[in-house]
Image 1 (cartoon, helix red, strand yellow):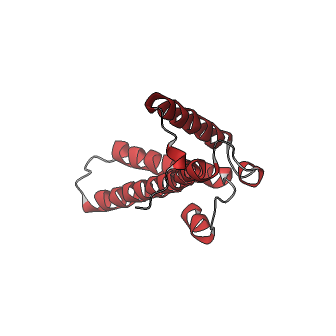
Image 2 (cartoon, helix red, strand yellow):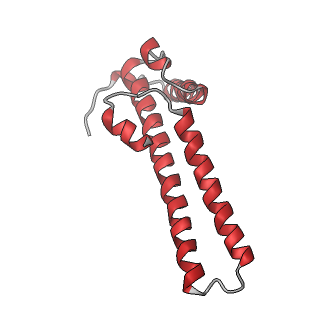
Image 3 (cartoon, one colour):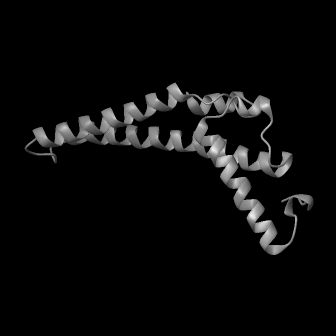
Length: 130
């Protein structure tokens, strides 16, 4: 669901705190189920036990991967925004960010500013395409 939100959006969609929380809860529930199954089972090599364990584990890993892709995409867009727009997040974007994302942007801006001062070069004025 989170990754689909990104696919439907051109910019940065509103941060989906509920969706992020739901994925984390699902991953935790899957791992609790795996741990309980292992604790209750005398033989995890039994295919009747091992197969569901693999499915639950793979589901948890997939959910984590999707969540990380969602967060990576959003932070990538914020870094891109810093290079394109400067050190201020536009109001229409700022209203769609979480507090942590705003903090990421501010920290990234500070880091980039410190680096440019250290090398005495405004890297944002240089245009290049990759």
